[in-house]
Length: 324
Image (spheres, rainbow, N blue to C red):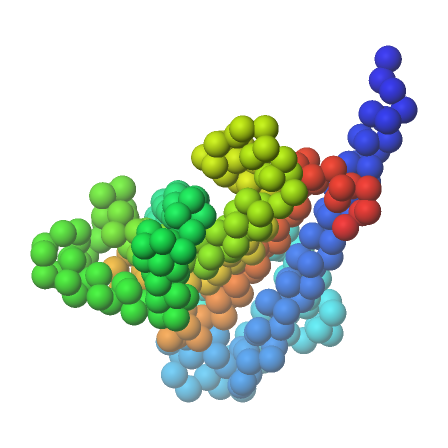
């Protein structure tokens, strides 16, 4: 039979998990309100913009009135929001202003390319940051640590697109490595994913290095030393597990940043994903596409943060007790 302590621990885990889920749902709902507001708060009349995007250069009052009725713009704003939200929950983001095609269908056509690029970039980011942080902590204040700290400071100071332009100029064009016009292959994704990975790893390495050094100087590390444990064992067995939670949190928070930074990288490397699709929509003021992209980025962030919270609850029982 299960002890009362086990039952209490499981109950605390479930309570904390449902609390995180409730917070995630509220955050997603707030994000949906903000995203939907992009259209009614945009300058100009929505119906007129739709007609102009569809090639009606000088719409008449009757055409504008008909567009208002067809788009449901005559309804009160709360009704318009819940109608839009109901469609979104069914996977319907409406029609593109320019192509008049389903935004959902156009997104699904481009989504695999973006998932490939960002997934590979995430792998690079995690691998680079873990390896570099372990090296920096193992050789604290020596030349490997100094080189790694210099890289993290440079990486944090320069935006991603600067490194992307340098890589495109010197690596792709200069050394003929990679492709100027990218197709959706793993080989073509290596260089842009590598650039994104280096950029994200700069800040993650700083965070993980600080956590590792703090753990290496803690009381339980000193106890392990007195018992004869090597520095390598202390670093991998004791310091890394204790420093991993803030690192996981940083990864969860950065998912939205990865998606948000994709448009510039995809444009520089002509990657046919959602980022390039967003840039086209921005130039054409194609608001349904913009709404869909921003909502996807926001929901990706909320989902990643929720999963990181669950991982933290499983790894650290103290979080269940205090309900934080």
